[in-house]
Image 1: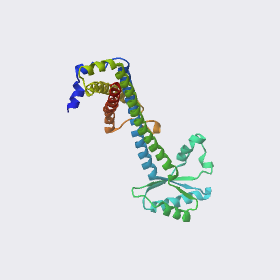
Image 2: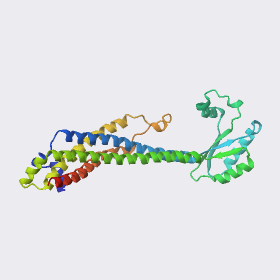
Image 3: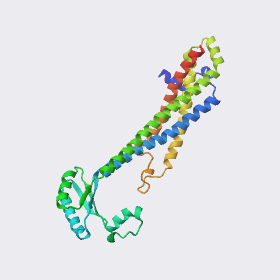
Image 4: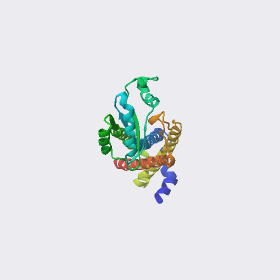
Length: 297
């Protein structure tokens, strides 16, 4: 409580040791603001990546595709037989054969619109949605192999896992970016504190001659740099949140490139960034001040 009071109120005489303006003040404000700004976007990307990973895992895990590879004369019969088997399979919530228009829409990105699906040997696709309990994929494949020779069940496992892994890797990368941002901020503030201490070496020597303790001198530097980091971090955080607000909202057309903002209580997390920036500045300045004062002794 005493330290918090000293940090907020300070000491008028001790504050004169640290220059209120100049290169070190501008550097501390700019670095803390820039790092907070970048941290907001890294945090937003981390949370969005987690949401995407969860959504892809849920959607792809519950969906499967049954492909009917059969001659045109047998395709309809095998499709009906496959649908009947799926309706009898425990764990399958729904199954339906895609229409020719839906299959043409799936192929249009590669072959363009107006594809004559009816005149081409395109397999019939059946969309399979499982319920919460799920179905026995191995048992279903064996029954389909015996009763519907042209049926191939694809549960999307081949490409579902890489997509989810990619989203989770992007989330981990965002977390690492936040840690690197914090480390870069600590390094820059340490340099600024060392520069301020060196520039005021003569003033520090005079303070020591009149009986000032190193802890008293260090407190002045720690307080000034911590408050500068808090101010710069608050400004950078505010600008970052405005930038996130201006980003496109989530949409199916935009896919992963939209909806990179915060949701719900997630909007409160950026408020912690200035506080964490102040804590980083406090630790970095304390270490720099103690080390530099020891060198100036």
